[in-house]
Length: 504
Ligand code: BES
Ligand code: MN
Ligand code: ZN
Image (cartoon, rainbow, N blue to C red; front, side, top):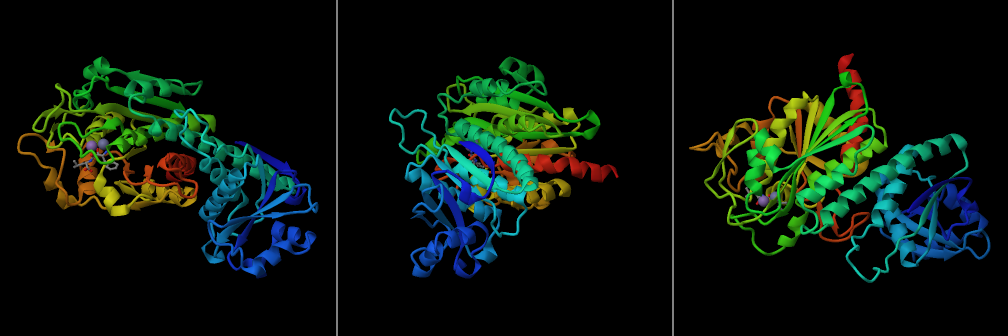
């Protein structure tokens, strides 16, 4: 989708439809473009609202015809819901609804103005417009012969007469566009079937992102063996797909600015291994590399946006299958950092990958480490399919993640690292074991990770819930959502300022 920013009022646009956003019971508060257009067209919007046929609720959208009053033939009214509930996320979803309506009518272009009274800055509204539109158009249909018939509108036009505001909108829209293409990239990788999206393919995709300020190294099994990444190698043993360890370096600032390390779990298919999963919904486990895909996408976008940060991305990748050489319950693995792990369940494989990668992260003396992983069904049970679990040892990192989540509409909720539960992952024969039982499963998984990353400042995002959506909703597609990409990019945008605070 092409994003255009046009100098001028909405009503001057020649797009196939002019999008107009209305609050619920918004009759009294028609303002901005809606008020002007209503007046110029003899009160057609007011008439519609008075009739009660359109109430301005979320997910409501209707078409009106302009009958020659404007260069554009159609008005597309979309609901914003109650004014007191309004915000960027509401606008993002309303935008998605408008774009879906326009797409359904096979329109090619939609124009929008940001004269919307949600109380948000013009930059935030511009970003939300682009995100709502670009993210709702996604469909994973590259394997389908017939075009899915859902080809999206080709252009979104943002109209603004004021040149100062126009500049701000342009900058924010460009930034949002880069973030959105990173989300779509991550969705493609996660929706991609595991017979295509293997650890090697992820390595190739990451390598293809490299550029002047983005260096990418990938290690194969032999190099990983030399480095001592035996936990990742243990997980990969049951598959004929070789494991990979991807290391991406983006240098956007001087070394003294410090480094953020991002770690993403990339299990290209999680069958559970010898501790085999039930068959129901097992196909969704092709997306068990969503964390890794998010990290690759974030590094790609950070470089495109030229963010003033230094970021290292670490993506341990493997396939978890129950082959003849597979690792087994009772096996003991010696991790990169030297700690030994007794395998109780081969299905608790994600934490094994992360153990090696988090241990390896210390090498970069990072000012922050954040890992993102579809780690536990327990976290999905606790927080559902929209909210990521968050754990961590560093208040500043967690606080910036919360602020980022507020901005991007990718909610995080902190769960506690309960010290007493450390007993649950004590092993009789090794330094620790890889499961702690059913109760508090997301917490014991996080405590396991903590052993490998301590004492580095760290946060952990368990995205087992929000990485996948069972149905199309708002700007989320059915399937892989790309959760975490915009969140981490927003975190990285906030990070340099926070560093300046610390040095003061
Ligand atoms: N990849 C799964 C977690 C998962 C579950 C992600 C559902 C997305 C949706 C992970 O590897 C796993 O199998 N975890 C086990 C851990 C258990 C064996 C301690 C789980 O959650 O059941
Ligand atoms: Mn598993
Ligand atoms: Zn898994």
